[in-house]
Image (cartoon, rainbow, N blue to C red; front, side, top):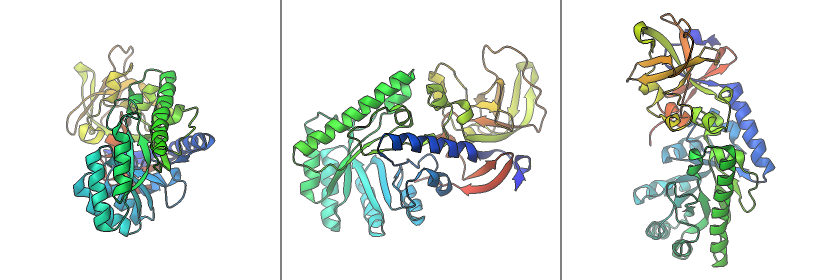
Amino acid sequence: MTTIDALETPRLLVDEARMLRNVARMRAHVRALGVTLRPHVKTAKCMEAARPAMETPHGPITVSTLKEAEYFLAHGVTDILYAVGITPNKLDHVVDLRRRGARLAIVLDELEAAQLVAAKARAASDPLDALIEIDCDGHRAGVRPDAPELIDIGRALAAGGARLAGVMTHAGGSYDCRSTEAISAMAAQERDAVVRAATRLRAAGLQCPIVSVGSTPTATFATSLAGVTEVRAGVFVFFDLVMAGLGVCRVEDIALSVLTSVIGHQREKGWTIVDAGWMAMSRDRGTASQPVDQGYGLVCDTAGAPLDDLVMIAANQEHGIVAARPGATGAPPPLPVGTLLRVLPNHACATGAQFDRYHVLRGAEIAGVWPRLNGW
């Protein structure tokens, strides 16, 4: 083992103990609600980081790219939901993954897409499993649960040669909530919408075995998931500053950070310059619309403890500018050239995407390196 002092910077760090505590809390909560956890591995994109959240070595999991499906299938995971609306130019890849042993399900929300999937199912002699995405909050994609076309989509799949595997939804609107009570209400809205859609499909004589909900905020604050079969969530593994700003976690729960070095100062401006810019932190400014704006990230010491009110206030490609947040009082601590700092990210998924590996912290030591995939 080595310590972080031996690492070149910037590097992506995972505090393993924090990560495992985060996973244990979510698994216990979902289990108490009587449903299956189908972790969304788009955050981790790494077998070692995803495995603790999985129910079995074979899954289930959720992916956001077919590259993720390829990677996890190669590691023995077969129960996979590809939770981005399917396009015709991906269907050959889907069929190939299924022929190689993946129980891969896809997602769609339009009649035209259902007809294309059914045609592919007939041509490939493979009853492709498809879930209909439900719009529960007007945030993104999906068909409304009471829309007439919901039944048409289901019938096009079932009658056309594909398999209607169920319904799914994502309460992305939970990221705009401003209280935990509002998130809990959003969780109920998410559940009610998808259960309503499943009830309508079944009343029309269609099978609907899977009823899937998912976002880390709503999963955390759901109090009842009656009628739901599974929960999808991903960022809970690491958490981030957006989740802390929503009250979903504490800053002390954030398991992901970027290790960076002080490379200079602009003392008359109160700036400390570090070697982690937006290429390391990402351009995500998700906390800018929250009550506490964390800039490009919250600055911590090497033990992961926040340093007063220091944030990364600006970022160039390879340079980050660290300074006291607006309105802060007191002098910032001295940070000589070479000082190592850890910066907590706004968005774990976006920051993780800047790196190809995690350096795993156990206490003060680097216990290992976990490879991470990117791209499509």
